[in-house]
Image 1 (cartoon, one colour):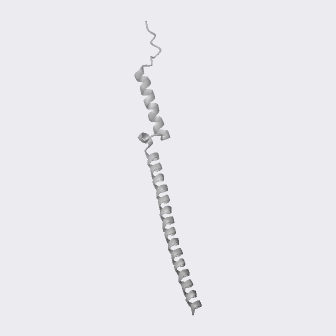
Image 2: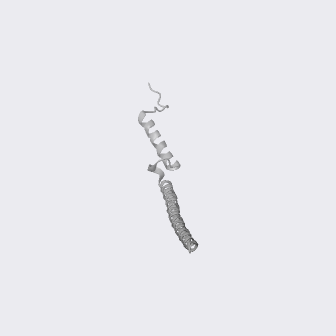
Image 3: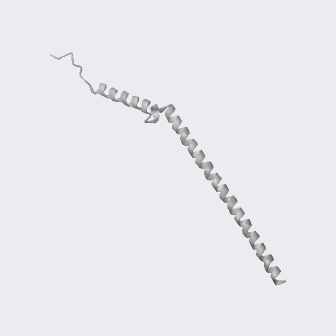
Length: 92
């Protein structure tokens, strides 16, 4: 009746084949969080490191800007003082 030499591919077998194929892809390529393991951790740490560097640079820039503004204000105050002194000298 039936030819026993050929194996029938059932839906279940096909499903398992696809499942293992995806698991293999996840493990080897590191596509998703499931099987990424070390690769995912590595990427996460790199992202953290990059953000930390960016944040530190940003904070440093803000700090430098504040220092620059402070110096600028001090210079302006000195200039105003000098101008006042010059005016006083002229009046005498």
